[in-house]
Length: 182
Ligand SMILES: Nc1ncnc2c1ncn2[C@@H]1O[C@H](COP(=O)(O)OP(=O)(O)OP(=O)(O)O)[C@@H](O)[C@H]1O
Ligand SMILES: [Mg+2]
Image 1 (cartoon, rainbow, N blue to C red):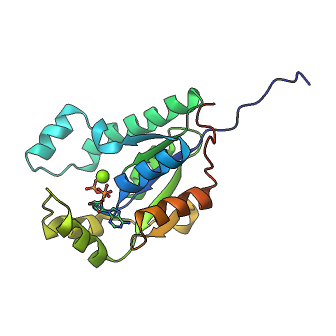
Image 2: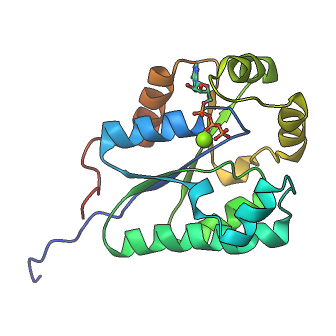
């Protein structure tokens, strides 16, 4: 034995769900509670994707692939530095989640799932935002519910943000300082 200390593996959490499910709120809350580094997936879009979205053109899977690979690469780079992360990313399709899984050694998903009515009402109240009803419908149509073999933590959107953060931290065992800085 050399006596050298082995750093604990880093943790990489992705908070997923349809638009308005609370991904940003909960991912930020997890970061605040645990010290995991937060990132917003939307901010990783390359300029071409941003231009499409501004023009109201939905992104297809081909356009999403480099973006998802960037996100996977961002997590992998943080893992290499011994830094744990929490990402807000809708990750609606299995193939999107599988691309994210190709980044760091392990990715853990938290799915904010539940009644569409709860999300719809919340979005209607969100200040400064207007969500056309068709957006939630199309998100729900796109959502591929995680298969049991993906071992995704599913939490009910009807809980309060505080309850959701606590549930994620407890169920995933993300105590403050867990691999946050190597
Ligand atoms: N558990 C919750 N209970 C009540 N309100 C919530 C909850 N989670 C989020 N909200 C509120 O609902 C709205 C949507 O939340 P948030 O922006 O976190 O969702 P999102 O999934 O990141 O949405 P988007 O897909 O548009 O990025 C915000 O006004 C937020 O304050
Ligand atoms: Mg968000």
